[in-house]
Image (cartoon, rainbow, N blue to C red; front, top):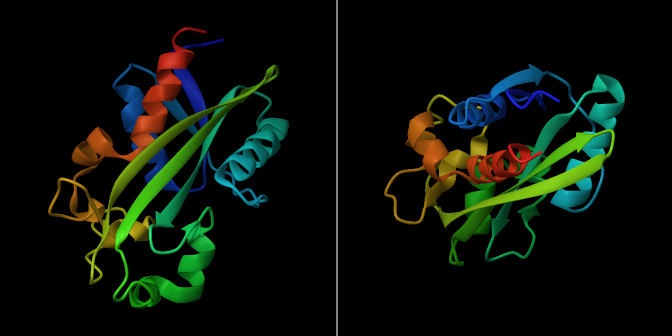
Length: 187
């Protein structure tokens, strides 16, 4: 097994960019396999393991996939592991309306799944913060919509306003990626 590179299966170039830049900190090259996999499951763990197994069946090499959820304190498990479906139904404006007068605390949670012929292993990352009262500019990462309404604790700007370099210092996906690297380097 080559510990200098890893296949990252995602159809989202912004997610890939974030994972690749985080891996690069550890001199690990990321190779994107652009594959859209239907999501099945009711938790982040179920979804990411299902995606990893389907990807591994096709790629037949060790790889990682990630899945990220958004969790509003005011609503247990909402949008939860289904941020894309919820965004498509309500849009950001509809989500902000649902939070009017409610606790605006929220968290991004990412699970990365590494899989090879022997099995799989999960790595977790989270980023806590608050939901804004208005929608901010998408910045460079237009595909990651929730970043336009999320301000991490300790910051005054949305995630979408951060440079990718600043984002990967604190992001949920980067935290999960670093945990994966710590384990992967020992293999």
